[in-house]
Image (cartoon, rainbow, N blue to C red):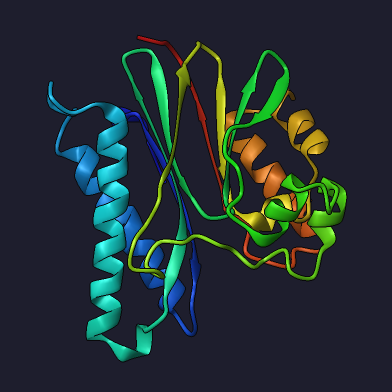
Amino acid sequence: MSVPELGLLALADGMGGAASGEVASGIFAGTVLEMISAGAPSAAEEPEELVRRAFLIAHRRIRERAALEPMHRGMGCTGEMVIFTGGRYVVGHVGDSRVYLFRGGRLRQVTRDHSLVQEQVDRGFLTPEQARAHPFRHVILRALGVEEGLDVDLVSGEARPDDLILLCSDGLTDMVGDPIIEERLGSDLSLGEKADRLVRDACDAGGLDNVTVVLGRVLQAG
């Protein structure tokens, strides 16, 4: 989801049987849009707190829906949210979808995966290359709607003109390495064409999972 007039980018990747993952993702997206559409944070509320609150409300709504409708029991989703305010970006992150920053021709992963294999990488038991092909790479340790509580990672930084912000599901990063993503984002293609090309790259590499890409450009900071 990209809503330029609100300075908002968001993405969710569902989990759960039948259409439950789509339901959870829809609740997250709807909650985020509702919260940001209500206006800028009050003077007493920092942007980070607004982002955190959006995640927590979406989390509660997903769990309430699952409790009311047994067919959706156990549903959940990853969640990525980026807002731009006062010359800064603020990222909220839960799960193994990712947010990247492309600036000055260089790609940087802003978020850290909440996954079993990422923990193994952090402990030095796996290399990033081994993690991408690991049979347990889809085991995530944090998601909206699953556990009673929810910890939300918050990351903020300076937003500069021409920065590209990429939000993507693991359907992209499982199939396409960072060097290719960096190359695509640095190409002369339009913003929409860059996103389409990344999806095609994932599909051409095997397309083993749903691929979702949201791409935004900072036109001016401040």
